[in-house]
Length: 214
Image (tube, rainbow, N blue to C red; front, top):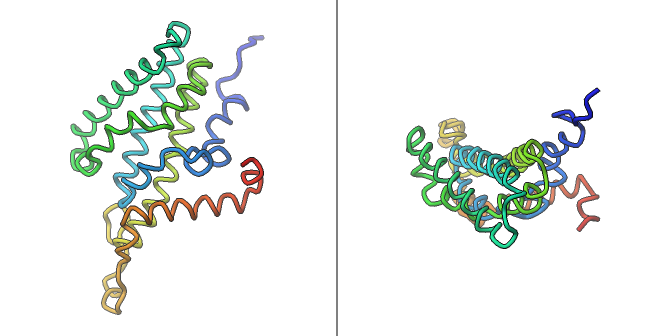
C-alpha cells in the first residue's frame, strides 16, 4: 500500500471548495476588491480577468512551491514578484494574440494582476509551505473563488445597466417601447462595491459562522 496522499483527498478537495464559499478571497477575506470595481461593467472582461487571475495564481503557486526550499527568506518577496510578473506578461501577450478586443477593454488591469493581493497572499500563506500539487489546487480554488464573485457582479451590472448579457441584448425592444430604461448608475464603479456588499450580506446571513469568526 502506498502511503502517498490521494490527489483529490478530502484535504485537497477543501483547497478547491473552501475559497468558493466559506473562505472566499473577496467576500470573506476582502481581498482583490479593486479589480471587482474596475472590470465588472460587462461580463466578458470579467470572465477573461477571472481566468487570467486563476491561471497566474495556480502557476505562480506551483513555481514558488518548487523553489520554496531554495529561496532565501530575505528576497522571497522579490522572487515572488518576478514570477508573477513573468506569468502576467505571458497572459497579456496571449490575450493580445487571441482576444485583442477584450485585451483593450481590460487595458492596464491585466498588468495590475502583478499587485493583486490574493496572489501574493497565497504565495506567502500557502505556496511557500506546501508541495506543488496542493499549491496548484489552492491557486485554482482561490482563483475560482475570486472569479465567481467577479462574474456574479458583472452579470447583474451588465444586465441592469445595459440590458445585455455577454454582449447579447436580452431585454426585448418591446420593454423599451413601454418605457423601460437601463440603469446607468449600476455601471458606475461605486455600484460594483455596493453589489459586492450585497453578496457579502447574503453570504453572511446564510452562514452565521462567518460573522462569529470575525
